Amino acid sequence: MDNRLPLLIAAMVTYDIGDAKRIHHFFKVHEFAALIGHLEHLDPSTQFMLEAAAIVHDIGIHLSERKYGSSAGTYQEKEGPAEARHILDELGGYSESEIARICYLVGHHHTYSSIVGSDYQILVEADFLVNIYEDSLSPAAIKNVQSNIFKTATGNRLLNLIYLSKISTSEDN
Image (cartoon, rainbow, N blue to C red; front, side, top):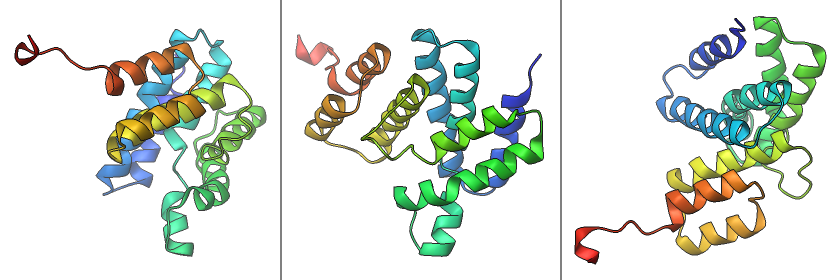
């Protein structure tokens, strides 16, 4: 059994020690990414790299805050890949091509203009599915994100079900 993802999760909990908000965030992004990837029928290698990237996607935040006083996406993308490489190297069991792709995804997960690859697309969608809730985006902003960012059928379906579909209640009847 491949235990690299559980070990990576445990390492990230330790890395983000005491920061419940960020720990909860990466867990949620990982779960959405895993779900979308499986339902979009990614091959096992791409699915694995997507899930690993989802776990470490915000690894550059703490360093960015220390160096720049900000967790802005541009700083995360600048600082995250080296941090991700360090933790993946430390854990071992990752090929150089896996590390390179995971670090690429970490270094681009806030860049929406040139998304290449289903793993990249799904990581961005999963992060948005969580950030929409955490940042309390308006319905208009959500629709804008959907029209400009979301491309997968599964991501669009989840976005619609979670944020854009009205739930019928007894008061509506």
